[in-house]
Length: 390
Image (cartoon, rainbow, N blue to C red; front, side, top):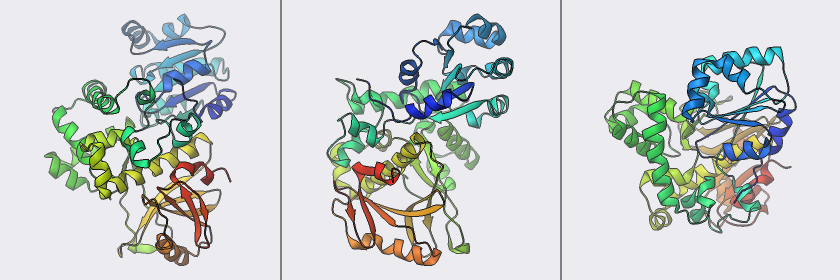
């Protein structure tokens, strides 16, 4: 079953402008499937193939010359052949054909200094994350209840017939830790690394405390920071920065921690579906995570310039999300409750007054219907596209 991806239109537009298109994102987020569909007449090369890997890394010029054609080249899992990027620069400068080279990778090329320098000004980057709520809704496979959707997660593979989500995520974790991490960095203890991932999952939506993570995992703070960078680079988790426009020293400066997929995070937490439903604290954190990352997917697929932050001060006033886009600053509260309440707008009203901000406030909740209220807009978790299509 192929589910249409909202990012496709943006990629098509970029391929008409830039000689190199790079599609990055987590392993198994659907990158290979999408680029094969979009660029079906291109020559496809997979760096996980031993012969192709050896050729590319030992003779990058000969490799690119050998596969030249009229249409273009797809180089999948391109992070395994970083030596190619300098040669790509040479080829592109000689013949800058729009969209000729399509790269994909399950690591963030932007964090690789050599790649960024080699392709500066010659590449358009796109991030393909696991499926969005809108994409699942369009395909008519979105769960009715948010707790069911959280447990199932958003990786495309779990929407194929006969796939058990729990078994899929267990295998995903094992594959990621045992193969991907081993190829990226030399880690002494993979058990400790897996425990670190679990500890991160248990702190979803919390202010990042690296010392706490290191202590509970039995590793140094330096190692903890290194592992966080590694998990960010491979699209397992991300850090949401704090908002600190003009409110001075009262504002929390540390970021909050979230995962790119809540199904994967729930598996790392070790919770089953029944526990997820009963433990409202855990459920609330995962619901907040789901909405936050879905907005990242939505804005990214629309090619909109945006910044997402959160607000918290020393008096525990907190706004879950601040969206800054098109000159607007939009405060968003995220509530897992199925019944919206007027009190959900209380902290937003305080924030609006403090910052002299007159943008309409938004509350995203776990129910099914949008509402227009005097305090602001109430938006169903199923209708997040309404936040960026106005």
